[in-house]
Picture 1 (tube, rainbow, N blue to C red):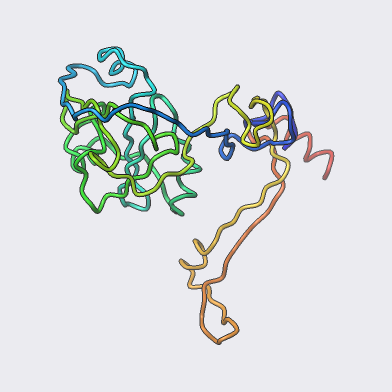
Picture 2: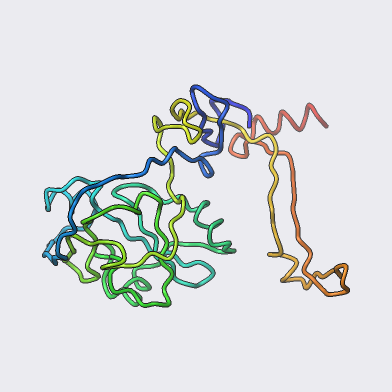
Length: 251
């Protein structure tokens, strides 16, 4: 990456170390949560006309970090529920990589109603079918007495607790970092800037060779799919004048 104000990508870097990454891959330092809360009884409460996280915590007079946001994605046409704390944003690149998915998209409201029985704004992790994969960001682990949707329009649960009330199949780094957070190496804070992609490398795996039946024989004479990768030179595609000038100068 080359730092430049016209860059299309967001580069995240530490102001005190050499850590740097594209926003799609950047991490922050996760600090374990310690709590001495006693687990409270699960309580279903009416939350009429309340849908967003901010509306929920305002209505219930709670800290936003006590709320769990439930998102639903379709990964290669299979449903995946993702849990995030408060207003944290899921990083779809991290999620795609974690699932090793060829195609990832947010579920439609029709799909969500069919899977969870409620519309957006009332979704939660309690009572999900066993065949639905549930992933959660690292910050969800250790969160006690949380607020979650009740999978019933206009209702939420207070005091939801992991394992007692809902399950998580795997905890992963799924969060988009924010400026000012601690660098993952513990040195300095994260800063954002713009950058132009100069070069790139992609690990394609067997996504294309499987569809083309591209095979090789291994040392034991067994057929295996060819593993592909690619690399190339990047350019700022939304700045045609700069691109045309570069083409003219380089031939």
